Length: 132
Image (cartoon, rainbow, N blue to C red; front, top):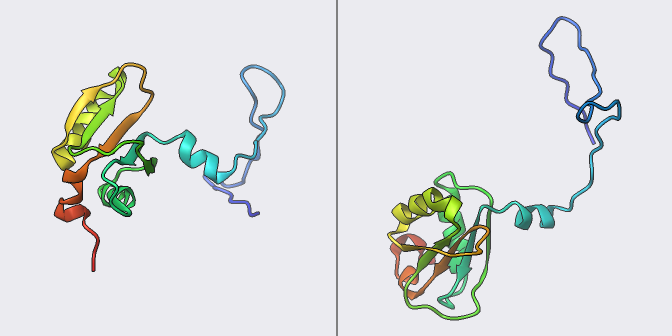
């Protein structure tokens, strides 16, 4: 492990972080990277087309356009048309994603994150096709 020191004054000053009005120092806990990737994901992409690596290619496509915190997986059922499902408080995110692909959006009660269900129509999108 390494330390990085940011010097903004002539002499460095070390401080101990305190937790909300107490004199206890803040502790840093260990969280495995695999858990971090799924726990903080803002967008979830599910392959509902059964096309090999479609969700992975879509994640790369969005990452190239500045999207972060994207998890991927396979949907339990096959879909012909793609759709973006979102909770009520994330409508703007769903609309931004819809402009990237032209997929329909639908509010889903009980949803906790934005989910893109990639249907067979997404597999025909030239930006998401496998490169030969």
